Length: 595
Image 1 (tube, rainbow, N blue to C red):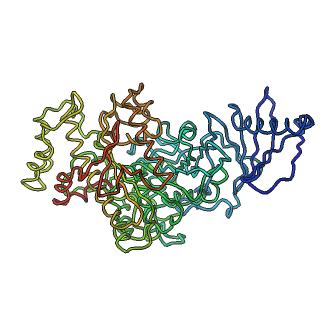
Image 2: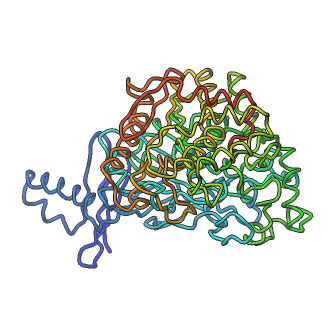
Image 3: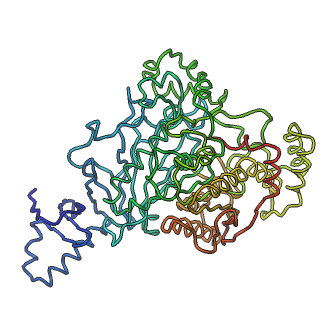
């Protein structure tokens, strides 16, 4: 196929492939932000002779056609080569883009390697019209779980409403959750879409990062060959590598590298907090949203390496070479899911057993995380001082109720369980808890009220109150604005989330992220007006924060107010302060969510 290419001013380069009657015609388009030029193929040259006026009209039409043709393919030139993406639902998508070398063989349990330095950039055009493999994992989290995914998984995806916007667009980088053990950046209803990019006029990036033993195994023998004399936290290093890729390449997709928001839910929220205090991530993002992240992130590397000897025993290996020779399945089945350090974290949705703790996955390794986050903030330096938003849901633990029959509880059952679980911590604690969480409490649903109040109690102790403490410490430390929200919305009906092992009724874990990504429709089936109103509230404020780096005037900074996100926005002062004081005064925060 012959092509005519005209010299134009330097700038971003794009190629639009338009499918017409089964035949591909390549039209090269090179655009400069100040002086746009359109270069058309020889097949279109005869039209130019119709006159200057017609030419200008035609050029505008072809530019419009190239960006809006439903079946159109588009190519962009990144630092590592050309990528071929697709136009769909009024936005462009580029999926499965490598951002680091595949962590295979000797690269297993090593920091992510740069593609250019490793000579792994591609010639020609790389297809980016579909997702690639997600990272190796098991579902559910036990040795009998189904092995899924691959190690060659360090890919990210980009969605953008325009490759050449009048002004660069804000960028939101999504970090998925899943206990640092499972899921991916390409889960339906739990990751960006073309529709979201078009509706919100923002650029979205979603990434896969190494998980479980592949991403977070801390062992002394894995320090060998490490440039930092550390082990573990490889998944966090992957996230940092992806953010560096964003800084170098996102302008090609119409994004503003100076206006990057990282946001993550569950262990993705934990990741956001880790990146906030990591010197390795300094300058790579400009706002941060921690959604239902963990509070406990303080395990020393040496103690974690000792805890993880259980994994080494199960593998039968004596050295790192042996470990790097194991299959994916052998590694996943050797993880101590139920034995300490109990990476499956089965007990985190119930009131705790005294003295029973879950072991760490992420660690204070001295490189990615140089010290416990609170100590880093207290030091006054070495962290990322950017606008920070911390959110939780009112019934976080509703996604995995601790008892099979909890939906059938009477108020007598509720009082018995609270008393049995809390009495070992002190004679008066259960009475105080039942006074603060009384059976006469308002219940917005017509049934299952004991279950709702019990999951509220567990969620306060494990998640909501500890996250208040994170937000308070952040507000005392950061010069940037700090905000707090609590989701109080109860969906119109029970949520059934495909691919996730739970059914939820109340303000459950993931409710805010599903609302933002449009996943509520899949989980509820039919959206009620109240569901739609809640989605709009979440989206409105998240996007304002990403664009402006602050909230509107009605949302004051913490601790002056906590936003309550329901079908309407409201602001509360000292929300649940008495309840949180109970858990803090009696030393329950060490039992807060970890990982």
